[in-house]
Amino acid sequence: MKNSEFILSIQKSISYDSTTGVLTRKVKAGNSPAGSPCGYLNEKGYVKIRFQGKQYAAHRLAWMIQTGKVPSSQIDHINQTKNDNRWSNLRLATASQNGMNRSAQKNSKSGIKGISWNKSNNYWRASIWSEYKLIYKEFKCKEKAIKWLDEKRSEIHKEYASS
Figure (cartoon, rainbow, N blue to C red):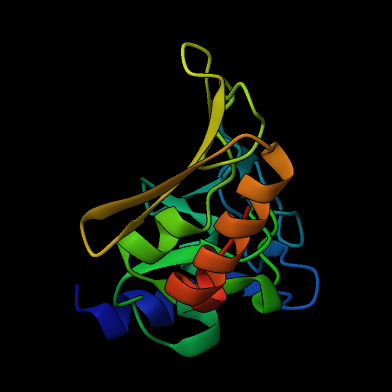
């Protein structure tokens, strides 16, 4: 099946409310009646939808319904909320740009992406990647490390910058 036929099939079967981000069935599918919301929340926090026997991320289907095109790259959730599929919260992104818009890892000691504590030397390290090169600076004060990192993020990551 060609991309255009597949997208047309999606558009005939599923409706997308761009203001709420909710996808709804236009036709009955299995036990789900027409008019029912599509999908379920998976273990990673994304809404997944079964369509024609395969699983799809709701944000990718929303993109196809809204634009009539298969996304040319990844789709980034601007506010980092993986199940917020409102059109205003979705944008195309490279893998690198998508990575720029991640929050701190759950095991982060500082709670801030790019900020770590070096207990042997008693300093805060602020670090950021730019064009495959790690840029970092060390600070005695956590607030100064955060300020420097925020400035670097704005400069390097531009609209994909996030803390």
